[in-house]
Amino acid sequence: MPSVLDTLAAHSDNPSSFLALNSGNAYFHDGGFDGACAYRTSGRYVLQFGGPFTAPEHRARLLEAFAAHAGRRLVAVQLQRADAELYAEHGFTVNQLGASYAVDLSRFTLRGSRFVRLRNKISRARRAGLEVAEVTAGDDCAELDRIDQCWLRDKGRHVKELRFLVGQRNGSLQRHRRLFVGRIDGETAGYINYSPVYGSRPGWLHDLSRRRPDAPPGVMEALNATVMERLTADGAGWLHFGFTPFTGLDPEHELPGASRLFTRFARFLAERGEVIYPAASQLEYKQKWAPHVVLPEYIAFRGRPRPGAVWQLLRATNAL
Image (tube, rainbow, N blue to C red; front, top):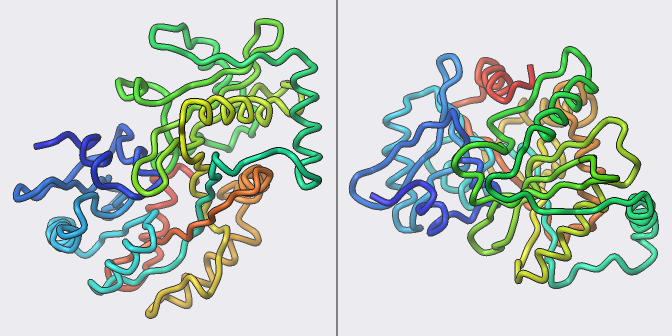
């Protein structure tokens, strides 16, 4: 049986699929073919991440087997459009939950008037002496741990670190990611961790990122711009900025049978849900880079959406 990582590399077309390997997830397999469903439990609910990862001809069978295994309290999140249609065909209630954003590195440029403010921020950080380096295996990451702690404290005492739908920096799988730090006068000001992306838009996912609260303006933009140059030189095709819930919502993206109540709930959080999830600030950062592709992403409920299902999803992500 191939590893889950091998399965993702062979069959996934979800730009966030590497997050399926996060610690805390479990995996369901059908012994008849290569495939996996990533999930975790929260309360009485089973929360699936990213749909069935398998060859196209096996996707329906894997979903049916997993749904039978998981039971009625199954919720699937971060589904791509093809996944959403498959789940709807199998009787799930499917709604758009947000969108993901991606830049085609072969077409990307910072030239032009639309990037004036971004170029100014990048120049300011570079004039401050920002130097970018890639962290390799065996490097001491204690300073990055301290940045994590400072970053979280700066968010406020009631804020917890998000999980499940965001990446990780530690563990044996870190060797498959690329971690870059920005230093000024030898002191780390911030870092960005990038995860591999497979499928039709292969490249890297701008995943976990942190900065010192007192870091100069433009540090993260300059860090990412430098990494984009290096990824392009290495032959990478796309840089994905990942999924942001409650953004890019559009009635045209909804499937027949979508829950009107959940649609209203998602739009309410899009307008007033910053306390639960920092969608607005994330979207502002991603739009700075003028993404070439915006992909709707979906949530699927077995049966009708229940308040308990939404509550357990928010708990699993540490948003509450």
